Image (cartoon, one colour):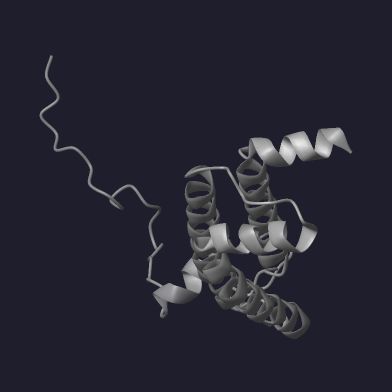
Length: 169
C-alpha cells in the first residue's frame, strides 16, 4: 500500500498560530550562540588587552639581538682571522685547522641570520595577536648562542696543534 500523500516540507507541521520570524541582525545570533555559559556576547567579541610591558621587553630583546648579530656575523664569516688573532695573543702559534674553520664560521653565521629573521617574524606576529611574545627572542637568542659556541668549538677542536699544546700544559 503506497502513501499517495505529499511529504511535509519544512515548517508545515508546526503548531497552528506559531510563526517564525528571522532575527534582525544575523551577526548578533552568531556571537550569542558562540558565547560561553554565563558570558555576554560583548565579552566574546572584544579583543585581548594590549600588553605594553610584554611588547616593550620583546622590542628591547629584538633590538639587542639585531645589534649582537650585526657585530658577530661578519666576524663569523671571517673566523679564520679571528682565530689567528686569538692564537697570536695567546702565543699558540698558527691555526692549523684547515678548511673546518671556514665551514664552521659560515654555518654559525647563517644559523644566526636565519634564527634572527625567524625571531623577528614570530615576535612581531605574536605582538600583533596580543599574545605573550618576550620568551621568543630570549629562547632564540639562547639557541643562537649554543649553535655559535658549538661551531667555534668544532673549529678549535679541528686544530691538532691546539689540542697538543693544551695537553702538554
